[in-house]
Image (cartoon, rainbow, N blue to C red; front, side, top):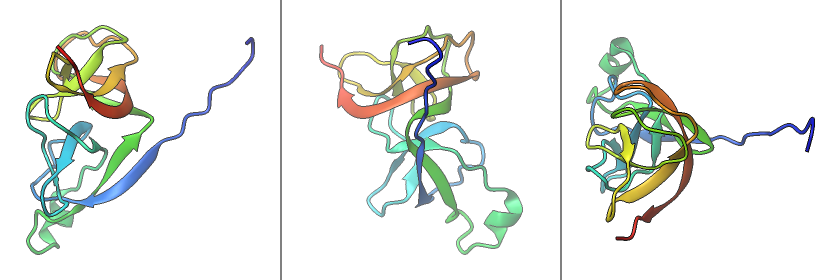
Length: 136
């Protein structure tokens, strides 16, 4: 349809953190048994993407300091750090440090890449999907 525009809906939730996530902005996170944000396991479940980047002063004011609250994006197109060069339209899962990787059988698919990334640590775009395990 010529001239049609696309409106994107992004949803974020506020999640208390269980670890220091200052170096984990734009990375997948999961929640622990206490509902606090942690990094995922390799190929495992994630609740969304950490969009926060609390600074040292914010953390120092909290007791214990790692219990900051971070915004976690749970829908829409998210900025996520890539683990390697990855093509567009690839189903992705999380690495243990929260980057995205091409999903393999048995891993939890968290999204689909929208654009290619040329190298590791490049911030790419991932369309977040309802998580599911990639069958063999």
